[in-house]
Image (cartoon, rainbow, N blue to C red; front, side):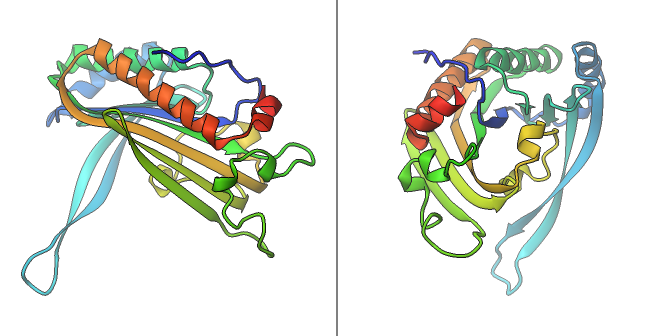
Length: 263
């Protein structure tokens, strides 16, 4: 079922991403040049290859654990303004944007990028499909954050004295075949990004980059981890379901007053 959502003139969403994980392609680097040429001609000329490092810790019977650094390659394709683009890994494609307009447009670009990868690489299966929205809730004029957020997200932030460092809430629920992770971080100052997103590769829009005061970041992530044969229609349907679930979570998180202000 598709949820009809009226577009807000002052929508608080400042970063959106969709990720589709697929069967690992050990020689993905061999296909990058062909993919880059297609994306360059499609409006994503900014290209970068990046090395990512992570530590893999394996506990042994010995006193000291076995710690091994693991290197991963990641390729970034963005538009000239660096406000949207694709991230390619050996086992995943991400489409992300800081200029979110409508879900229909976002979904179209996500699917077209995945379709291109499939044409070049010939994917076998999909293992995980995720959609994530980050919204910046900032009071307008003389309003307070309490007027915008569900009281359950405020914690003690509205009652304790002094300068707030942060207030954090997280709720994880199983919905249908997937999991919804809904977080709210309240701070005084700039927007607080989750560590897994920092540093943000894309450029924030000025109205969000310039925030400096009491604000809340709503970070809502829905994902389904299930192996299925590669099928673009099924991926598109799952992303639509994820959008509906995240939309409902957003409605719970913010007040009617907030939605009226953003309308």
